[in-house]
Length: 196
Image (cartoon, rainbow, N blue to C red; front, side, top):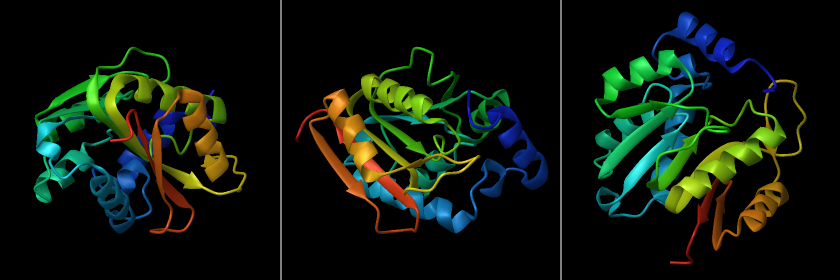
């Protein structure tokens, strides 16, 4: 079971803040953009040659940000477990959006999987399932950010660097790139299937 009810966590935020960064429980639009910028830096320069699946896509904000930064992928697929997110992301992006439980359902294949923030309210076991399923469904790599550190929280999920490295080892990841120098208590990881 998640630490908190995912549906309530997000539907309450949407009700209160609407289709904004806070509506998907980010502290601010700036922190959301900072995380997106790190993801874009970790993707290849010629991202227009690759397909991307956005695990826990929310309102489709990452795709809209990619368009704004002129870094649109060849194909974008959004994945979310909540019907509210599905409807909003479909309308906003015009792309294929899939309703799926990333921890349990079969996922569409894509060159890269990305995830920004969707694992922040999962339990440790679910986080492992989420990462494994996304990594298995990508052809090239999986980029994700999570809360970082030793903190224990009733609501949020924090991972340490050794925990992330252990997950990579268990999955047989060929190359791991970690970035934790952009925001306190946050880390972005790139798990690659080849050393490139």
